[in-house]
Image 1 (cartoon, rainbow, N blue to C red):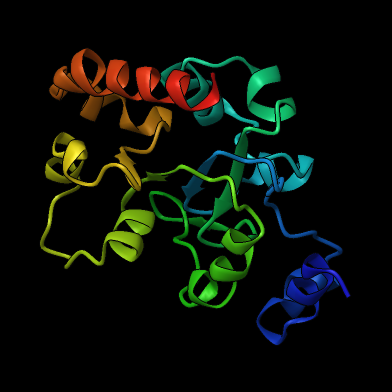
Image 2 (image 1 turned 180 degrees about the horizontal axis):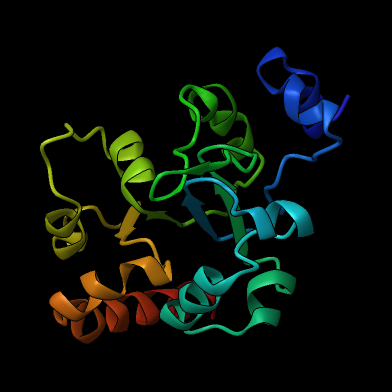
Length: 189
């Protein structure tokens, strides 16, 4: 049984398997950079391709790579905190379910021995991987990205919903994005 089959057969995923949904993630064993986000959008769930939406377009821009490098090079892996689209909430998509990362991420990360960097996109990934209390602000974590290197690089979510945050925090695109692009280039060179 493959890991995908195990995930689909797990009791916590039976409602998604009943809908004939596949878990959405991509973990080539050659991956050097692992991107951990929150959960697939509806479009991503429908296409089965991580970051295949407006958020992904912006993320690739921040990384300084094109679609081909991102999807076809084998340098990038994509693991969400939850493998399935969680549904709509009052102000956007619902959060990822709890305990999915704890159960499945260690197994997935183990399949990528060449990984050099884990990019943590958004609050859910940062709180889990950096073991942060809820009172810590995402802005402070992202602004202090270099404190988490060389293993982790925290980012704000690239969703268009964060345009206001980006306008209020010009240092992000002036300082953080160039540092991220330089690091990505060094790793995949």
